[in-house]
Length: 320
Ligand SMILES: Nc1nc2c(ncn2[C@@H]2O[C@H](COP(=O)(O)OP(=O)(O)O)[C@@H](O)[C@H]2O)c(=O)[nH]1
Ligand SMILES: [Mg+2]
Image (cartoon, rainbow, N blue to C red; front, side):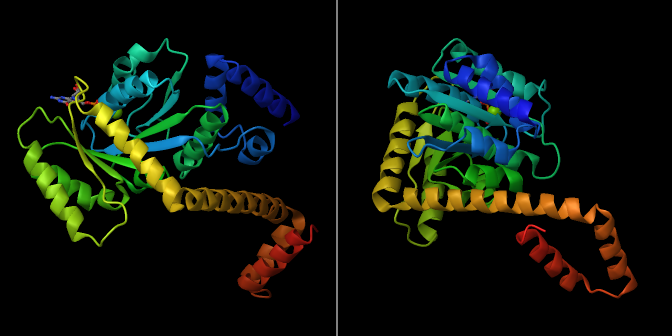
Protein backbone atom coordinates (compact mmCIF):
# COMPACT_ATOMS: atom_id res chain seq x y z
CA UNK A 1 0.00 0.00 0.00
CA UNK A 2 2.70 2.43 1.06
CA UNK A 3 4.59 1.61 -2.06
CA UNK A 4 1.63 2.29 -4.35
CA UNK A 5 1.14 5.64 -2.60
CA UNK A 6 4.71 6.51 -3.28
CA UNK A 7 4.37 5.46 -6.88
CA UNK A 8 1.23 7.47 -7.41
CA UNK A 9 2.75 10.60 -5.90
CA UNK A 10 5.87 10.25 -7.95
CA UNK A 11 3.97 9.51 -11.15
CA UNK A 12 1.80 12.55 -10.51
CA UNK A 13 4.83 14.82 -10.11
CA UNK A 14 6.24 13.50 -13.36
CA UNK A 15 2.90 13.84 -15.13
CA UNK A 16 2.63 17.40 -13.91
CA UNK A 17 6.03 18.09 -15.40
CA UNK A 18 4.70 16.88 -18.74
CA UNK A 19 5.64 13.22 -18.77
CA UNK A 20 2.91 11.47 -20.74
CA UNK A 21 3.94 7.94 -19.82
CA UNK A 22 3.49 8.70 -16.14
CA UNK A 23 0.12 10.24 -16.87
CA UNK A 24 -0.91 7.16 -18.82
CA UNK A 25 0.17 4.90 -15.99
CA UNK A 26 -1.88 6.89 -13.48
CA UNK A 27 -4.97 6.53 -15.66
CA UNK A 28 -4.35 2.79 -15.94
CA UNK A 29 -4.01 2.58 -12.16
CA UNK A 30 -7.34 4.34 -11.70
CA UNK A 31 -8.99 2.25 -14.40
CA UNK A 32 -7.87 -1.00 -12.84
CA UNK A 33 -8.99 0.06 -9.40
CA UNK A 34 -5.44 -0.21 -8.09
CA UNK A 35 -5.18 3.46 -7.33
CA UNK A 36 -7.81 3.53 -4.63
CA UNK A 37 -10.18 6.46 -4.41
CA UNK A 38 -9.47 7.27 -0.77
CA UNK A 39 -5.76 7.04 -1.29
CA UNK A 40 -5.85 9.20 -4.38
CA UNK A 41 -7.88 11.86 -2.68
CA UNK A 42 -5.60 12.01 0.30
CA UNK A 43 -2.63 12.22 -1.94
CA UNK A 44 -3.08 14.45 -4.89
CA UNK A 45 -6.37 14.64 -6.68
CA UNK A 46 -8.59 17.68 -6.43
CA UNK A 47 -11.09 18.96 -8.94
CA UNK A 48 -10.18 22.51 -9.86
CA UNK A 49 -13.36 24.53 -10.32
CA UNK A 50 -11.74 26.47 -13.17
CA UNK A 51 -11.77 23.33 -15.30
CA UNK A 52 -14.37 23.41 -18.05
CA UNK A 53 -15.88 19.94 -18.12
CA UNK A 54 -17.74 19.13 -21.33
CA UNK A 55 -19.62 15.90 -22.08
CA UNK A 56 -20.29 14.96 -25.71
CA UNK A 57 -22.81 12.25 -26.46
CA UNK A 58 -24.91 10.91 -29.31
CA UNK A 59 -25.47 7.73 -31.32
CA UNK A 60 -22.51 5.78 -32.71
CA UNK A 61 -21.38 7.35 -35.97
CA UNK A 62 -22.99 10.74 -35.30
CA UNK A 63 -19.54 12.32 -35.56
CA UNK A 64 -18.61 12.86 -31.91
CA UNK A 65 -14.95 11.95 -32.33
CA UNK A 66 -14.61 13.98 -35.51
CA UNK A 67 -16.16 16.99 -33.77
CA UNK A 68 -14.04 16.46 -30.67
CA UNK A 69 -10.92 16.50 -32.79
CA UNK A 70 -12.04 19.77 -34.42
CA UNK A 71 -12.93 21.18 -31.03
CA UNK A 72 -9.41 20.39 -29.82
CA UNK A 73 -8.13 22.51 -32.69
CA UNK A 74 -10.34 25.47 -31.73
CA UNK A 75 -9.46 25.19 -28.05
CA UNK A 76 -5.76 25.09 -28.86
CA UNK A 77 -6.09 28.21 -31.00
CA UNK A 78 -7.15 30.03 -27.84
CA UNK A 79 -4.01 28.70 -26.14
CA UNK A 80 -5.93 26.55 -23.67
CA UNK A 81 -5.08 22.94 -22.92
CA UNK A 82 -7.45 20.02 -23.29
CA UNK A 83 -7.77 16.42 -22.14
CA UNK A 84 -10.14 14.06 -23.95
CA UNK A 85 -11.56 10.94 -22.36
CA UNK A 86 -13.25 8.76 -24.98
CA UNK A 87 -15.53 6.08 -23.64
CA UNK A 88 -16.90 3.24 -25.67
CA UNK A 89 -17.57 0.25 -23.46
CA UNK A 90 -18.92 -1.77 -26.37
CA UNK A 91 -15.62 -1.91 -28.18
CA UNK A 92 -12.43 -3.43 -26.86
CA UNK A 93 -9.34 -1.27 -26.77
CA UNK A 94 -8.11 -2.50 -30.12
CA UNK A 95 -11.56 -2.34 -31.71
CA UNK A 96 -12.48 -0.29 -34.75
CA UNK A 97 -14.10 2.66 -33.01
CA UNK A 98 -11.22 3.27 -30.66
CA UNK A 99 -8.62 2.79 -33.33
CA UNK A 100 -10.61 5.16 -35.53
CA UNK A 101 -10.73 7.75 -32.75
CA UNK A 102 -6.99 7.57 -32.39
CA UNK A 103 -6.37 8.04 -36.05
CA UNK A 104 -8.84 10.90 -36.28
CA UNK A 105 -7.38 12.61 -33.25
CA UNK A 106 -3.88 11.60 -34.26
CA UNK A 107 -2.99 15.02 -35.61
CA UNK A 108 -2.94 16.25 -32.00
CA UNK A 109 -0.71 13.44 -30.76
CA UNK A 110 2.47 15.53 -30.64
CA UNK A 111 0.87 18.54 -28.96
CA UNK A 112 1.83 18.81 -25.26
CA UNK A 113 -1.35 20.80 -24.58
CA UNK A 114 -3.52 17.86 -25.60
CA UNK A 115 -4.03 14.49 -23.94
CA UNK A 116 -6.33 11.84 -25.42
CA UNK A 117 -7.23 8.64 -23.69
CA UNK A 118 -9.75 5.90 -24.41
CA UNK A 119 -11.40 4.04 -21.57
CA UNK A 120 -12.90 0.94 -23.08
CA UNK A 121 -12.98 -1.60 -20.29
CA UNK A 122 -16.23 -1.81 -18.44
CA UNK A 123 -14.85 -4.05 -15.71
CA UNK A 124 -17.29 -4.93 -12.96
CA UNK A 125 -20.59 -3.24 -12.43
CA UNK A 126 -20.07 0.43 -11.87
CA UNK A 127 -16.46 0.09 -12.98
CA UNK A 128 -16.60 2.75 -15.61
CA UNK A 129 -18.83 5.13 -13.73
CA UNK A 130 -16.45 4.88 -10.80
CA UNK A 131 -13.30 5.39 -12.87
CA UNK A 132 -14.44 8.29 -15.02
CA UNK A 133 -14.89 10.88 -12.23
CA UNK A 134 -11.46 9.91 -10.90
CA UNK A 135 -9.80 10.27 -14.29
CA UNK A 136 -11.58 13.61 -14.72
CA UNK A 137 -10.25 14.71 -11.34
CA UNK A 138 -6.75 13.64 -12.32
CA UNK A 139 -6.88 15.72 -15.51
CA UNK A 140 -8.24 18.68 -13.56
CA UNK A 141 -5.49 18.34 -10.94
CA UNK A 142 -2.93 18.34 -13.69
CA UNK A 143 -4.25 21.71 -14.82
CA UNK A 144 -5.99 20.96 -18.12
CA UNK A 145 -8.26 23.92 -18.95
CA UNK A 146 -10.84 21.80 -20.75
CA UNK A 147 -11.83 18.20 -20.24
CA UNK A 148 -13.99 16.61 -22.93
CA UNK A 149 -15.68 13.30 -22.17
CA UNK A 150 -17.02 11.53 -25.24
CA UNK A 151 -19.56 8.76 -24.67
CA UNK A 152 -22.00 6.83 -26.82
CA UNK A 153 -25.47 8.01 -25.87
CA UNK A 154 -26.87 4.58 -25.25
CA UNK A 155 -27.26 2.90 -21.90
CA UNK A 156 -27.88 4.21 -18.43
CA UNK A 157 -24.23 4.31 -17.38
CA UNK A 158 -23.19 6.35 -20.41
CA UNK A 159 -26.00 8.87 -19.95
CA UNK A 160 -25.13 9.07 -16.26
CA UNK A 161 -21.46 9.70 -16.97
CA UNK A 162 -22.09 12.44 -19.45
CA UNK A 163 -24.75 13.96 -17.21
CA UNK A 164 -22.05 14.67 -14.65
CA UNK A 165 -20.40 17.16 -16.97
CA UNK A 166 -20.93 20.88 -16.46
CA UNK A 167 -21.91 21.32 -20.10
CA UNK A 168 -23.49 18.47 -22.01
CA UNK A 169 -23.46 18.50 -25.81
CA UNK A 170 -25.83 16.13 -27.63
CA UNK A 171 -24.89 15.33 -31.23
CA UNK A 172 -27.56 14.28 -33.72
CA UNK A 173 -27.64 14.06 -37.52
CA UNK A 174 -30.12 15.40 -40.06
CA UNK A 175 -33.26 13.28 -40.09
CA UNK A 176 -36.36 13.22 -37.94
CA UNK A 177 -35.52 9.76 -36.55
CA UNK A 178 -32.39 10.90 -34.88
CA UNK A 179 -33.95 13.63 -32.79
CA UNK A 180 -36.77 11.29 -31.77
CA UNK A 181 -34.18 8.75 -30.73
CA UNK A 182 -32.33 11.36 -28.69
CA UNK A 183 -35.60 12.10 -26.97
CA UNK A 184 -36.22 8.44 -26.20
CA UNK A 185 -32.75 7.86 -24.85
CA UNK A 186 -33.27 10.61 -22.27
CA UNK A 187 -30.75 12.85 -23.98
CA UNK A 188 -33.14 15.78 -24.38
CA UNK A 189 -33.22 16.37 -20.64
CA UNK A 190 -29.47 16.42 -20.20
CA UNK A 191 -28.63 18.50 -23.29
CA UNK A 192 -27.29 22.00 -22.69
CA UNK A 193 -26.31 22.36 -26.35
CA UNK A 194 -27.54 20.49 -29.42
CA UNK A 195 -25.37 19.87 -32.41
CA UNK A 196 -26.74 18.82 -35.76
CA UNK A 197 -23.61 17.36 -37.28
CA UNK A 198 -23.31 16.30 -40.94
CA UNK A 199 -25.06 19.53 -41.87
CA UNK A 200 -23.67 18.93 -45.37
CA UNK A 201 -26.43 16.34 -45.75
CA UNK A 202 -30.03 17.22 -46.58
CA UNK A 203 -32.51 17.78 -43.79
CA UNK A 204 -30.44 19.81 -41.32
CA UNK A 205 -32.88 22.74 -41.29
CA UNK A 206 -35.86 20.45 -40.73
CA UNK A 207 -34.09 18.67 -37.89
CA UNK A 208 -33.26 22.02 -36.31
CA UNK A 209 -36.93 22.97 -36.53
CA UNK A 210 -38.03 19.62 -35.00
CA UNK A 211 -35.59 19.96 -32.16
CA UNK A 212 -36.63 23.53 -31.51
CA UNK A 213 -40.29 22.63 -31.25
CA UNK A 214 -39.50 19.67 -28.99
CA UNK A 215 -37.53 22.00 -26.73
CA UNK A 216 -40.31 24.53 -26.65
CA UNK A 217 -42.72 21.82 -25.58
CA UNK A 218 -40.69 21.08 -22.49
CA UNK A 219 -41.25 23.39 -19.54
CA UNK A 220 -39.74 26.83 -19.65
CA UNK A 221 -36.06 26.75 -18.87
CA UNK A 222 -33.79 29.56 -17.79
CA UNK A 223 -31.31 28.22 -20.32
CA UNK A 224 -32.75 27.39 -23.72
CA UNK A 225 -30.33 24.92 -25.32
CA UNK A 226 -28.96 26.42 -28.54
CA UNK A 227 -28.87 24.31 -31.70
CA UNK A 228 -25.57 24.41 -33.61
CA UNK A 229 -25.09 23.06 -37.11
CA UNK A 230 -21.69 21.60 -37.88
CA UNK A 231 -19.73 19.72 -40.51
CA UNK A 232 -17.25 17.70 -38.50
CA UNK A 233 -15.19 16.71 -41.49
CA UNK A 234 -14.26 20.29 -42.46
CA UNK A 235 -14.77 22.12 -39.18
CA UNK A 236 -17.70 24.29 -40.27
CA UNK A 237 -19.60 25.56 -37.22
CA UNK A 238 -17.10 24.23 -34.68
CA UNK A 239 -15.99 27.68 -33.51
CA UNK A 240 -19.66 28.43 -33.02
CA UNK A 241 -19.97 25.33 -30.85
CA UNK A 242 -17.00 26.40 -28.72
CA UNK A 243 -18.55 29.86 -28.33
CA UNK A 244 -21.80 28.27 -27.13
CA UNK A 245 -19.86 26.09 -24.67
CA UNK A 246 -18.23 29.22 -23.26
CA UNK A 247 -21.55 31.07 -23.20
CA UNK A 248 -23.10 28.19 -21.25
CA UNK A 249 -20.15 28.26 -18.88
CA UNK A 250 -20.79 31.95 -18.23
CA UNK A 251 -24.45 31.19 -17.59
CA UNK A 252 -23.48 28.51 -15.05
CA UNK A 253 -21.21 30.96 -13.26
CA UNK A 254 -23.66 33.89 -13.29
CA UNK A 255 -26.66 31.84 -12.19
CA UNK A 256 -24.80 30.18 -9.32
CA UNK A 257 -25.51 26.78 -10.86
CA UNK A 258 -21.81 26.04 -11.19
CA UNK A 259 -21.41 26.49 -7.45
CA UNK A 260 -24.32 24.13 -6.87
CA UNK A 261 -22.73 21.59 -9.17
CA UNK A 262 -19.43 21.84 -7.31
CA UNK A 263 -21.30 21.47 -4.04
CA UNK A 264 -23.23 18.39 -5.09
CA UNK A 265 -20.21 16.82 -6.74
CA UNK A 266 -18.22 17.26 -3.52
CA UNK A 267 -21.13 15.94 -1.46
CA UNK A 268 -21.50 12.83 -3.62
CA UNK A 269 -17.81 12.19 -3.46
CA UNK A 270 -17.79 12.53 0.31
CA UNK A 271 -20.72 10.14 0.63
CA UNK A 272 -19.17 7.60 -1.66
CA UNK A 273 -15.93 7.67 0.32
CA UNK A 274 -17.84 7.18 3.58
CA UNK A 275 -19.80 4.41 1.91
CA UNK A 276 -16.62 2.69 0.73
CA UNK A 277 -15.08 3.07 4.16
CA UNK A 278 -18.02 1.63 6.05
CA UNK A 279 -18.41 -1.22 3.58
CA UNK A 280 -14.72 -2.13 3.91
CA UNK A 281 -14.96 -2.25 7.68
CA UNK A 282 -18.25 -4.14 7.65
CA UNK A 283 -16.77 -6.65 5.21
CA UNK A 284 -13.77 -7.20 7.47
CA UNK A 285 -16.13 -7.84 10.38
CA UNK A 286 -18.50 -10.23 8.63
CA UNK A 287 -15.53 -12.20 7.36
CA UNK A 288 -14.32 -12.72 10.93
CA UNK A 289 -15.38 -15.52 13.30
CA UNK A 290 -17.76 -13.20 15.22
CA UNK A 291 -19.21 -12.08 11.91
CA UNK A 292 -19.95 -15.60 10.77
CA UNK A 293 -21.59 -16.31 14.17
CA UNK A 294 -23.77 -13.26 13.62
CA UNK A 295 -24.80 -14.46 10.15
CA UNK A 296 -25.60 -17.94 11.52
CA UNK A 297 -27.76 -16.44 14.25
CA UNK A 298 -29.73 -14.55 11.59
CA UNK A 299 -30.24 -17.76 9.60
CA UNK A 300 -31.32 -19.67 12.73
CA UNK A 301 -33.70 -16.88 13.61
CA UNK A 302 -32.22 -15.86 16.95
CA UNK A 303 -31.31 -12.47 15.49
CA UNK A 304 -33.23 -10.43 12.95
CA UNK A 305 -31.28 -9.02 10.05
CA UNK A 306 -32.29 -5.37 10.49
CA UNK A 307 -31.29 -5.44 14.16
CA UNK A 308 -28.00 -7.15 13.32
CA UNK A 309 -27.25 -4.53 10.65
CA UNK A 310 -27.91 -1.76 13.17
CA UNK A 311 -25.62 -3.42 15.74
CA UNK A 312 -22.90 -3.86 13.16
CA UNK A 313 -23.20 -0.24 12.04
CA UNK A 314 -22.96 1.03 15.64
CA UNK A 315 -19.88 -1.10 16.22
CA UNK A 316 -18.21 0.34 13.13
CA UNK A 317 -19.07 3.93 14.02
CA UNK A 318 -17.69 3.44 17.51
CA UNK A 319 -14.58 1.92 15.98
CA UNK A 320 -15.02 -1.43 17.70
N1 LIG B 1 -20.70 13.77 -44.33
C1 LIG B 1 -20.23 13.96 -43.11
N2 LIG B 1 -19.59 12.96 -42.48
C2 LIG B 1 -19.11 13.17 -41.23
C3 LIG B 1 -19.25 14.42 -40.59
N3 LIG B 1 -18.70 14.31 -39.35
C4 LIG B 1 -18.23 13.06 -39.25
N4 LIG B 1 -18.45 12.36 -40.38
C5 LIG B 1 -18.11 10.96 -40.66
O1 LIG B 1 -18.96 10.12 -39.89
C6 LIG B 1 -18.27 8.93 -39.50
C7 LIG B 1 -18.40 8.69 -38.00
O2 LIG B 1 -17.70 9.71 -37.32
P1 LIG B 1 -17.15 9.54 -35.83
O3 LIG B 1 -16.55 10.84 -35.44
O4 LIG B 1 -16.33 8.33 -35.68
O5 LIG B 1 -18.52 9.30 -35.03
P2 LIG B 1 -18.73 8.90 -33.49
O6 LIG B 1 -19.01 7.43 -33.46
O7 LIG B 1 -19.93 9.66 -33.06
O8 LIG B 1 -17.50 9.27 -32.72
C8 LIG B 1 -16.85 9.10 -39.98
O9 LIG B 1 -16.70 8.40 -41.18
C9 LIG B 1 -16.70 10.59 -40.21
O10 LIG B 1 -15.76 10.91 -41.19
C10 LIG B 1 -19.94 15.46 -41.28
O11 LIG B 1 -20.15 16.57 -40.77
N5 LIG B 1 -20.39 15.18 -42.53
MG1 LIG C 1 -16.27 8.13 -31.37
